[in-house]
Figure 1 (tube, rainbow, N blue to C red):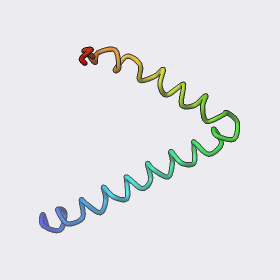
Figure 2 (cartoon, rainbow, N blue to C red):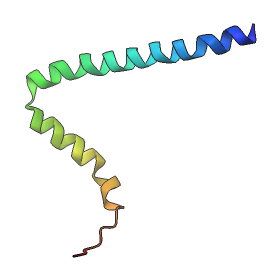
Figure 3 (cartoon, rainbow, N blue to C red):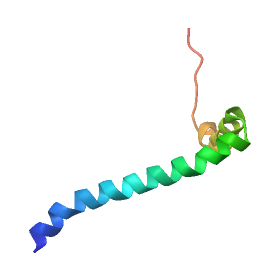
Length: 61
């Protein structure tokens, strides 16, 4: 019985990934109709901006 569960787990994870991808696609489709894609990209960048601040960049020739 435990071996059967281990065989079923990857398939369930793939189905879950498909549902997550599909739901994000369904949510983005009306968003692209209402808003320009550049506005959505800017909002995503602003959301991720704090992560970029932790990156140290050194100037080198």
